[in-house]
Amino acid sequence: MSNQPACPKCNYTYTYDDGVNFICPECAHEWPMISDISDSDSDAFIVKDSNGNILSNGDSITIIKDLKVKGSSSSLKIGTKVKNIKLVDSDHNIECKIDGFGEMKLKSEFVKKL
Image (cartoon, rainbow, N blue to C red):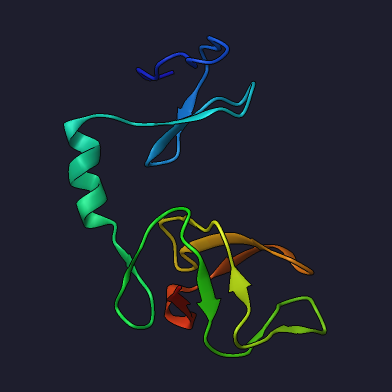
């Protein structure tokens, strides 16, 4: 393994990082990576909503148009509110949990920050 720190909660040694946080697979504890390298990486990874507002982890958003849900007969309706989002570095750059649908990945161009 690389130079990952041990979990501060349970001292498990096989932790990993997800780009912004370190994660312990044993107890699921997450803690921020603190270094000069991660500060420069966070500048490169900026997610903006449809209005150009910068989004961050834990923000609340609203869906701005009806979205078809792949594999489901129903769709997400305009105005659906989503709390506590998580940003990821992919084409669907928002991970969230929506009541009635469960875990979802959304594109930031279809949401606006509350």
